[in-house]
Image (cartoon, rainbow, N blue to C red; front, side, top):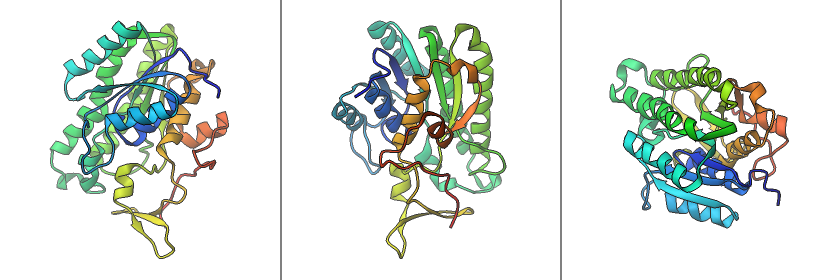
Length: 281
């Protein structure tokens, strides 16, 4: 099997489950040594732990280093990159993914005045500030041709709620400004926009329709058919393809959907499909 990222070192934040886990798996499968973070060490109500991610990486023949890290704590984040420097001496890929999705699920599509003010802090602290902090520590380690991927979303119009929209829009702006700052260092920065993804959290909230398929009801947005939703590893294949592209600096500062990148690089999901963006039933 081809290992286009052999010898590369990557950090993926928030990879106990979901999109972060899918990205860690695919980077490792492509040959990178992947340091991945999370807070979940033992099984709980939501599937996924650091140990399970590591075991799946090893089943794919990859090398993964699980690092317990609470991204609320800047000292723990700094310690992560200090460890990467000590053990590897360099970094090639940073994926800023960590996000408090389980904490935000009850507040989807609520008007902003009905939200607890703490929702803002969760999104901006973990969904935006933590990406800034990780990037600050990563840049001195990033090699020529390095890559930062910010896992974001297209927030044109109204998305899930005001803090979510502000956080993701801010992340995309961070992408463009980081890209300008890092161009002379030959480090590319891109925003990745996944579609509807079959994460563990999403599947826990799904129901079985009359035809036997899975459907997710999102208040205020309708019912979504999950038959064509992306697996978390589809985003992983997008990131692995970006990391292997020697011309990536030409598109630094831009945003792309996972499907855009599948068309560009010719990869499919784990089932051989090329998922479309899902719309309500």
